[in-house]
Amino acid sequence: MRPIAKSAKLANVSYDIRGPVLDKARAMEEEGQKIIKLNIGNVAAFGLEPPDEIVQDMIRNLPAAAGYTDSKGLFAPRKAVVHYCQEKQIRGVTIDDVYLGNGASELIQMSMQALLNDGDEMLIPSPDFPLYTAVVGLSGGRPVHYLCDEQSGWTPDIEDIRAKITPRTRGIIVCNPNNPTGALYPTQVLLDIIELARQHQLIVFADEIYDKTLYDGNTHVSMASLADDVLFVTFNGLSKNYRSCGYRAGWMVVSGEKRHARDYIEGLNMLASLRLCSNTPGQLAIQTALGGYQSIKDLVAPTGRLCRQRDLAYDLLTQIPGVSVVKPKAALYMFPRLDPKIYPIQDDQQFAYELLAEEKVLIVQGTGFNWGAPDHFRLVFLPAVDDLQEAIGRIERFLAHYRKRHSV
Image 1: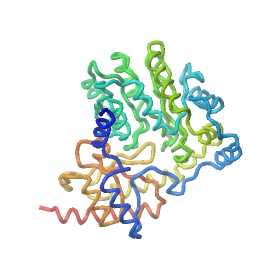
Image 2: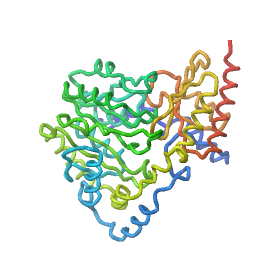
Image 3: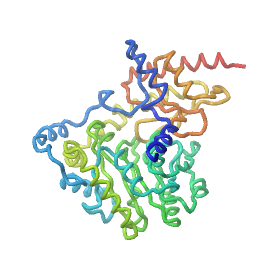
């Protein structure tokens, strides 16, 4: 009965890979209708390709990639991750602290399964990346969402976090840079979260998958570089910074206060062994990616494609009456707000459904990211400039019709 109960928990989690809006999109595509997709950060679908040197290295090494590797991964890519941690000022990381996985998603799930017992609580940001809420529930835990403050650039509300810590709280998840808001947290906010973790003996789970996708000269500070007396589990990978989502190449690093985490680390090792290993071709891309030319810098530069698309999306959205947006400092997303006085939306999933049906634009409703009110949606600014301009023009037209239909 336990797997059924966990599936029931998952059924209450909304995400853009499931649900009536996506079902409608698939049906429309089967009918030959062209949809502009602003719903998912699958970079390859928008013509953003991985660096050629990564592809060529994988091809050359593929004949030797048919066997299992060590359950934590091959030595060379794990050593490259150790060197990357040194660059990020994360101290004391050895090769034994590095786990390679089929994307960071697999490792996030593993990290929760090794930790949580039934009823244990995990602090998760709201809005969230829905994977966290799902895997905490599937692992028997209870997701507890702390608020990120839109008025403060979507940074975590420290007092709200403090108020939600209980004797059952085991850890706190921090997604920085953030999906879905594009926020980049100030160092002081990170230090404040670490202090709460220190006071309450919590594990900090730091998702830093977008740590190179930064705009306007911003820099990223890894949480694990800020303290040695707290246990950190840091996630990263190639999917976004290196445009290789399908390679499923990610890593997890355990650092900081490990002396009192022996049972937890033993659990991680056991789970890593149970899945035998992550895919070998994906592992082969890691060393080359981390040591090669960082082409993401060209894309996020002021004249780079991603930066230009971010600026265009922000400018076009903020010109629409009743729409406000915190301009992303990082990542590939923005989380616009629809003024409830102008757009009295009761069901934002239905709102997204109607936008798709009428204008053939696919977005994700804000409640799909465990945001409590039906007044936001997530937009991916990955399409090329012409497609992005067309898509937001359609959104503007739909919202104009919505205002007319609901005007008092």
